[in-house]
Image 1 (spheres, one colour):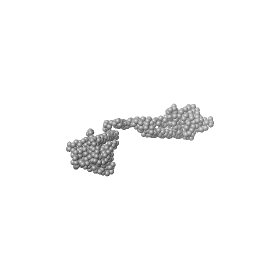
Image 2 (cartoon, rainbow, N blue to C red):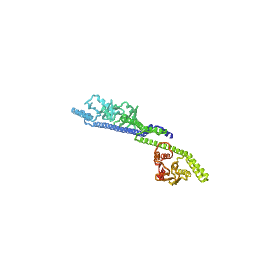
Image 3 (tube, helix red, strand yellow):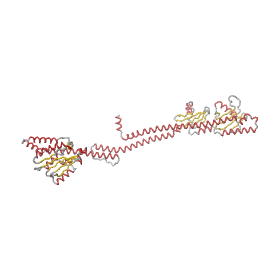
Image 4 (cartoon, rainbow, N blue to C red):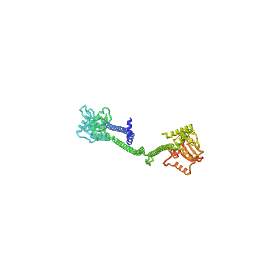
Length: 582
């Protein structure tokens, strides 16, 4: 799992975007495909049901129409004119015979015109030895033979529709026992059905397809899609015994057909309607093509959209990566140019500000460390010079010589503490109380040296100062500066005051003397150096000022002024973070 995640993480952004959009859209496409197929199947079922109902409706109409014709035909058994011509011809006058024939013909014509499916109606009358027909008053002698042949075909396999010489008839024989006796019947009525009308009826189905009306002896087809007819009849025959009406899909070769079958018990005939499945699903297939075009278009849109997002995201990221690599190489100066106002512009600006702050912080830490090292070096160099160190040893020699061992012990201890503090490495900040102890060690040594000339007022460190950390070696140089420059030429009654104060936002250290002070030009030059940020050799007060500014910024620093005793007063401000926290 971890390896798979690692491989995924290593994939570039553009393939990730494409895969992400595809994963999001794939369920939608799948759902659309499923819905399309379900809709397609539902439409096929609905169309199939509709066609089945339409076929049943048209077949029922045909059945009812032929049933009506057959019932009307059977009523001719009781027709008065027909009975007179069949039984009473010998006693009828010519007028009566002609009138009866004309009336009968009129009735036959009326029956013929009542149905489009009737082509011709003829009645062979044995006593008349002729035929009354809707086409002619009397027929040829062979009409009797044809009428008998049709009647015999009816009693063999043609009820109610008789097939004879590729024509269809509705036959009525009186009496109806022609098959049991050789006696010639009184009359034979044959209604010839219109093959053209039946074919046209098959062509009037609302759906374009092949249709056949058939039984074992005859068949009428509309000649649409004749090629697969035999195979479709063969495959449909498998289901005929199971149901009198059904619809099923039939596959002939590579083509699929929908077949609708219905059988009429009354007519002893079946209706088969079939059509290519493409006829009803062709439009749906068009929708399927449009669906796949939509899928392909969506995929192209996803790729283009992903590429657009890739350009919108990757190009700024590339610039940012280059800048990161530049910073990694230690180049903090080159900036990332950006005039953008969007989120990337905000990131670029924040990044540049972060780099600038990092550069400033590095400079501060580096420069502060250098200045601390310079301060320590200067202090060490100054203290080991004869100016301080020899004087200290001379004091010890004098004290030992005059048997002032306790004072010599105090001086030697303070001298050891003093050098131990300034030579200690690794500490850039110390608690203020440690710095004050170091200053006291220095003052104790100087008190022995200047005991008759300088009076020191060293105020105890207030309790609230304890625990405050400050840069190391920033207080002792102030006191040393007072001894060397302020009180160096004072012969007597020299004063040195070291005090502590605080308020809500800062701690204050004050060193004041009553020395000779500085001239106006010296005051101005010193203030310029303290406020200037130009690099150069920095010692004493200037060194302390630069270190405080690097550490605390505008919240800390050093100020000088003329004191109330006539000499110099030096202030050091340290931020009171303890006060801010409380």
